[in-house]
Amino acid sequence: MSDVDKKESIVISCAMLMDELKSVYRKTNSKLPVIWIQRGMHNSPENLKQTLQRLINENQDKKAILLTFGLCGNSTSGIVSDNTKLVIPRFHDCIHQLLLDNYGGWDHFPNKDRVTVGHYYLTRGWILDREGIYQQAQFILKKYGENMGEEMLKDLYGGYSGIDVIDTGAYPLKTVSEYAKKCGDLLKKDVKIIPGSTVILEKLITGNWDKDFIVLQPRETLTRNHFDEKY
Image (tube, rainbow, N blue to C red; front, side):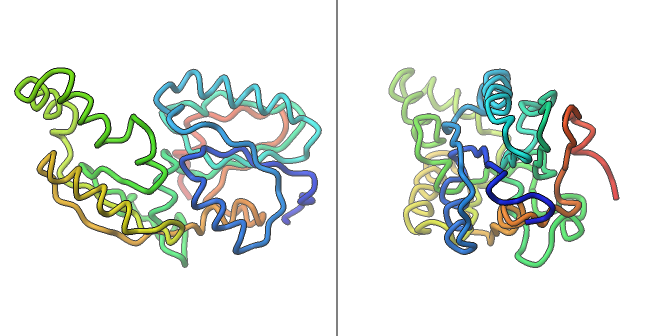
């Protein structure tokens, strides 16, 4: 595994990516230990940053700490590890890394054209909590009534033109596509299924840390600029 022994590395992952990471573990027979961070913490970037930094500090006996996060609303900007390498995918949002095809990474992602402005992306991990788009919409309609609730939903989701289900191959597609259809019907949005990939997660845990990744040396602080570097 690159220049780091597998026994000397640990993964810190958002539970939003649990299906995909478990799929990669089965495919690669990986034995790397994983620390899961609860879904939904990305809604509070400062809390997420504090949690990540605490977990990094608690695992300084490792040689490398692998994160499945992206920049995620600046929640990872400013994190640092005193004694270990930090490795993180070079994507602004963790869900963007699932949009790549199976044969390429950053070079096959010109102008981030797989990320369509105005599209709301879903995987199974993004529909499980009360913050899920359908659960949130139902809560708003119940609390504020149909008229006011619909106006609030327009404010929240009016900027989205479509809902895309990312087929990563890591979860039953039927459940998520049915959920997305309910959201589309409720919010009057087009719904489609698009191909996805777990290639970035696979490269992360197998040590193929190419230019799709930021590899920080001990005491090197992660910044937003690391995600914007051009090659």
